[in-house]
Image (cartoon, rainbow, N blue to C red; front, side):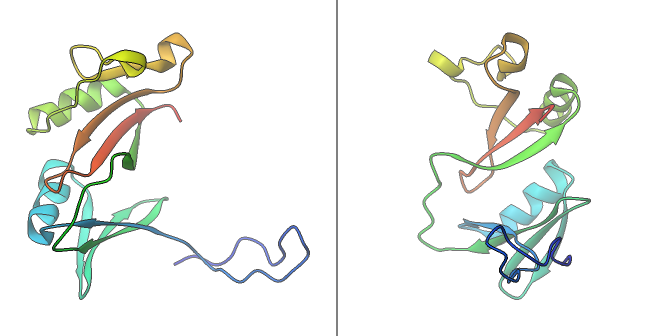
Length: 141
């Protein structure tokens, strides 16, 4: 974990936190480990309480088991990429299935919402992990 970047907050109080991380639940830790390592190529280490997903320069995401897990209806993890089409093509070749949406966030035949190309947000494509958690690859954020 990294050190606090400042020693004072806006109210001139001493910083309390030295780091932060995000976490989310899955219903099967072993399926999650296989998906994140083999399908996505993420560094994963097993911890007593779950999995740590390791990202260079971006910290750690903790994944924990929950028997009655219900997937969130929103994106729980975004992966930044420099080229959305290359990322989608590569992940598709590994067996990742991208979501298809209509309406305001209409995706193209590859599953990409081209917001960056139209000035309506980033170029982004959503997919799910084995537990049904919504993930994305996002270009240029």
